[in-house]
Image (cartoon, rainbow over all chains, first blue to last red):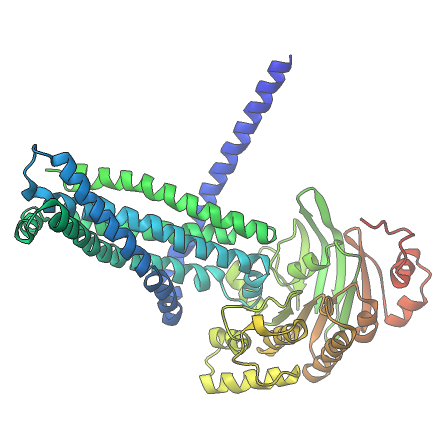
Length: 268
Length: 248
């Protein structure tokens, strides 16, 4: 009897969580729809967009610089180790370049920007929610999605590819420094490796991913910020949720996009 | 005029409003009284369309706003100004930008005109040279007044006050009370003031309504309220913990 009751409670719990999850996906979809609907009117206030682009982009430069430099450096060390007498070192530049522009640049940039920007958007909008600033905005007949969400998400979408290009350069440079100073590859060899296997479609794929990642980061920050309930604790929870959701979704969408891009669009 | 009929709202397991009827006449200041947690703020949020009732109708100058689309609601909201409990100033903007936001968003006024209107409205509420300050650096009383300046920037026909004197010292509370009276005379607005502060209520009200159990249980002029023998009303006026109202 007890086991039956327990199983029933377990079932009800799972069912409730599943419903909650579906409802959440639905609410996010509605926010995305409203974002698209208000995109054009929202971008008319250019100043709001520029402010946000600055917050997303310029504010993240230093962080992206550091992680990219070390990502490139690690890529060089790992490549040298795995090549060891199997693959000639002249390919080291190619391997670093391609892994960086297709995968490491966009994904790692998205993860750190997601942590930094996603959290700050969620915290800001969450605080606005709990201090009735969002209600005040609606009471003033200003649509908060147009005024707050559109500039933030659009800024993330615009800035992510730019940050990714920056990250690509720095990572390739980081790889170069390690390759030349501690692996014993000459500058000429490294640069030749870069040139030999550079494809525009790789770069395009990386940047397209970055666009999607930007959208995910901005949208998760805004959604969880708006959904904040109950004081400082709620703001903390919203921030955590925004970061976790954007990181998870970045990696999932990375897989989906990789499939679409390299198995269909660019399939040989 | 604002007319609420049979307005009900359930939040979670609590029936906050339960078939509430209320009329606010043009040009009057109606004070809605009631213990904390009786849904006074919820009532205000219904009037300005920030919340939708489960049942009932809310008419603003004969126009039912229940079921309106957000865009239609925005047209109604432009006729309102609302002072929030914590002022709800946008803390990413300066005080001047806060007060001028509605004008920038909804009118074709030139920046210089907006600026002079902002200065004027801040002066109305007794604030000078605060335009370039951030809300965070203002005191509680100044924040309330800045919030009020923002609420009146667009020359509203209706002003809603959510606990305007809560958290202020008695002198600042009286300054706010004076302002509410003053604005009503100056602008001829229709006001709804939600409060549990009897001093403030007596000072600003043309009429009072007592909210309890999701309904309006007593209405009348300040004189009628003070003279009444209604036990509920008496308990509230006298501030007694014993009586029909159970403190929660």
